[in-house]
Amino acid sequence: MRKMIILFSLIVAAMANAQNQRFIYEYKFITDSTAKDKQLSETMYLEVASKGSKFYSKDYFQSDSTMRAITEKDTQSISINLGDFKFKGKIRYNIEKMYPEYSTNFFTTLGSDEYQVEEKRKQNWKILPEKEKIGEFNTQKAVCDFAGRKWTAWFTTDLPIQDGPYKFYGLPGLIVKIEDNTHSHSFELKGSQKLPAGYEWKSTKDKERYHTLITINEAKFKKAFNDYRQDPMKSQKQMLAQGTIVEMRDSTGKLLDPIQASRDQEATAKANIKKQNNILELDLLK
Image 1: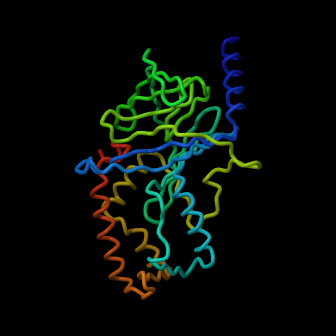
Image 2 (image 1 turned 30 degrees about the vertical axis):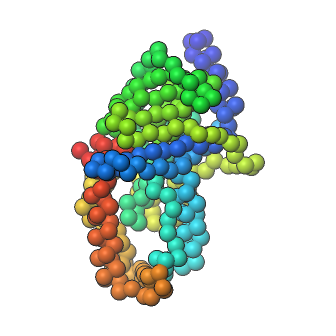
Image 3 (image 1 turned 45 degrees about the horizontal axis):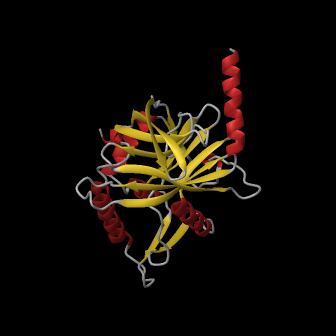
């Protein structure tokens, strides 16, 4: 019992030292297995506070904030000029871990529907003796199987916080780098900074939204995910059926025919989905 109390005290002390820090990761990924030469990258933030952490795309968060500011003017009639606004960022999800249990929630969108998925799978890490210097950090190797992939992580006890990018956590220090064995997906720590004074950790589930947040388990989300891949325009069709008026314009401001524009969108969405055959969580496709 004494050992458990000491360990908990050490964890609390480590968390206190890491509070209100933003860790900046570079995420490199290949989502199309037929185009392995076309590697993409995105800057991701892991924000750590006393309550927990958030992991999200820097660019998409900024674009989402801008779009919400535009659309909150009118919830029934939405006019979109395709030439004036484009979402930046390719990663549309964010992940929250609540301390000290590290309970994990995955927030993402499929069409216009927003989901909260509670993560129940465990990462059974095997810590290995190999050590490596990555940037300024002394790191140690660990491996695990997760979400249909085999992962190799390098963690540092120089930052004794048991967190990391994406859904990964549970090692004796911050994960500095993690990569799957096919070299399709990797996260690497590139820097850190203090969060602004007065920063307050708020859950994504509590933000204002126009549609009800759909809270489901992993099995139901897997079904919703694959249903969306089959019919990516389903939620937009439902919006139109409910009387929401969506005006779409081209780069010149010309009003587009809604039926044809919807067909074009659907064709583009299906083509993009077809290329997403090498997603991070491969077991979603099985």
